[in-house]
Image 1: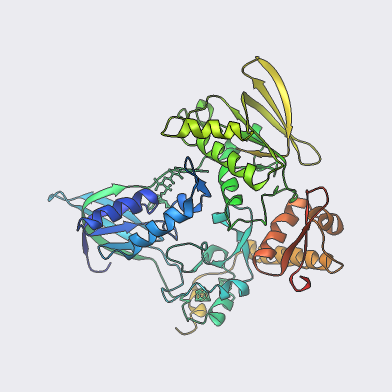
Image 2: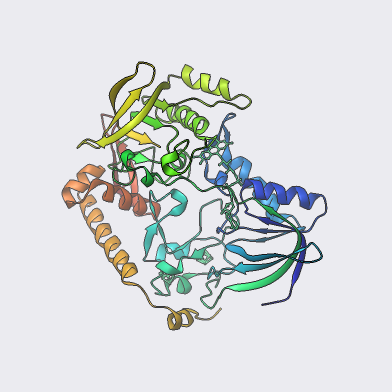
Length: 351
Length: 90
Ligand SMILES: Cc1cc2nc3c(=O)[nH]c(=O)nc-3n(C[C@H](O)[C@H](O)[C@H](O)COP(=O)(O)OP(=O)(O)OC[C@H]3O[C@@H](n4cnc5c(N)ncnc54)[C@H](O)[C@@H]3O)c2cc1C
Ligand code: SF4
Ligand code: SF4
């Protein structure tokens, strides 16, 4: 344990909510410590394509916000860190243990990525939602903040190639976990949300059928720093031309312990459908929904706009997805308007 | 900073899984690059030639593009599949 530090506010989570909170408080003169467990600030939003309902570029909103947060003199940022043992003191303050995990790369890193070329280990890139590989040493993603490499020690072959090639001498395998006691007056919890694991609904075939993807995987396919050279099917690299969206996948579903609405999937699917119409002008996009919850300002107009662009909306509940030999998917669904069971073929399905 | 790799080597060993990953990636890399020696190909064409599943080729090919050995070529006449080729041939 090292010397105790004191702050007015501890913000847990460096997504858009945590960054915005930290920045607003810092601007009012409060001393803030922002603790993010991931390698970069930005949360989910930094990885999105465009945002509904304005279709503004998500990275263009998040990146300046995050860098303003990172530069503010009243904010101390700890990434790849967590807190343990939050304890309320008699004074009303909180005593917290800050835990900094070793990144094995120092702040001298320039983000040149020369180490990545030399590293022999390839593992799934979590920032491309596993659609492509990354190296065991890696700069998390191009707009990461801080833009410093990290070593995934569980997957490191201990070959030392990165240390040999690094021009900034920034590899440091002697790093260990550090614990620091801190005292704060207030704690803001802005740890966001976890994405639903679609393997919990086996009838949708995610994991088994490679052309069933998640909406986050589709977000990544729609950004300039995408995993593939275009929007393509992970199974065989084919450019899809008949894409289906399955809404409420994992939401409003007691069987997976999640009875509530995510409040975002109707709108981000409508957004992605519009973006796909732009990226793949020949493609048909069909959205299977239970109810469209376009509840915010401009949301209903956004939904109408998608319809006007030719996106087909079918009120239907998907019972089963199966795969054909050519990788296309058969969706068996209840057409809620007519009450009939129907089947439709698509070449890519987004959950 | 000096040579710090020896410090961690005293504390950790390399798992069989990591060794397997390196072997598997190198094997697929070799096969894909060999297949492209005879010219640009689509993912199903590479998969057929190498007797691998198409999704395995997609993943490894896209990783090779990311790290610079391969580039994207033309889209076929049916607007379905891109071909991929060696970087220097572009
Ligand atoms: C596919 C998809 C598309 C979307 N599209 C849109 C859109 O177009 N428009 C729109 O307005 N919204 C969209 N959203 C919603 C948007 O992503 C969220 O509203 C936003 O990311 C919420 O930000 P947040 O900071 O609250 O949470 P998060 O983005 O989840 O960030 C939370 C942060 O806290 C960190 N954290 C978690 N636990 C801890 C811990 N114990 N200690 C320290 N740090 C921790 C996490 O690593 C993360 O960085 C979309 C969401 C998805 C999934
Ligand atoms: S020591 Fe580890 S991170 Fe560095 S190049 Fe070798 S495998 Fe990659
Ligand atoms: S660790 Fe070294 S080689 Fe790797 S990105 Fe940073 S400065 Fe470049």
